[in-house]
Amino acid sequence: MRRHRPVTEVPDVIGLGAENACDIVRRAGLVPCGPEGEPEPVTGVVVAQAPVATAGAEQGSEVVLWTQLGPDHSAELVPPTPTESGLQPA
Image (cartoon, rainbow, N blue to C red; front, side):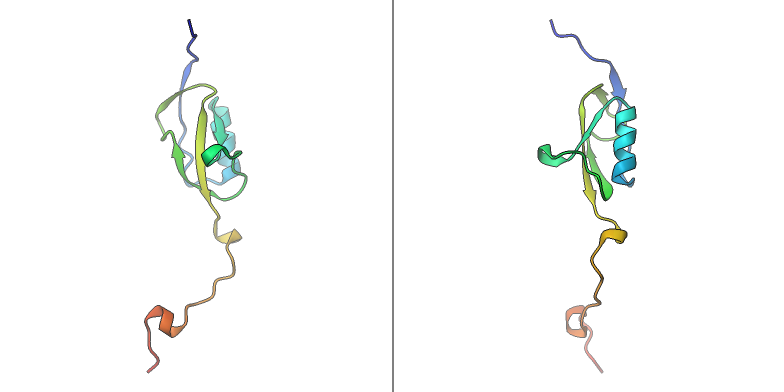
């Protein structure tokens, strides 16, 4: 017979930096990881997670974190040309 592990509440880490989010997930007794078997994210901001916050999960279960790079990591922004933006010169 399989023993069930204690169930813990999945923390809400959406909007947090990857490092902080992973720390919070670990403190809840869960294992942070990236999508499709990737290792835990180390950069970016968490934009989605599974299971969702406040869901119950067995301790030691994985929480998948999807991240997106924040403004500090983006390429230099180049404004669109008037044609690209739909604006025509007068």
